[in-house]
Length: 81
Image (cartoon, rainbow, N blue to C red; front, side, top):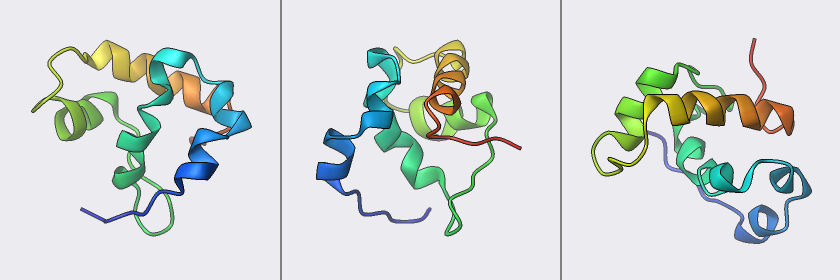
C-alpha cells in the first residue's frame, strides 16, 4: 500500500471539500492511500469497503461508500472513467 503525505492546510481550507456533504468530508483522508502514484484507484465500493472500512469501522456500510463515491465527483475531487 502506498504511503502518502497529506497537506493538512490545503485539506482544512479546501473550497472543493466544502462542496462535499459534511458526513463524507473526513473520508477523503481514507481514500488518499488507495491511489497509486498517478492518483488512480479502482472505484469499486465493495472493494473499498473491504480494504478501508471492514476491519475497524463497523458503522460504515457498502451503501455509505457508494453514496460517498457519488459525492466526491460532484465536487470535482474524484474523476471516474
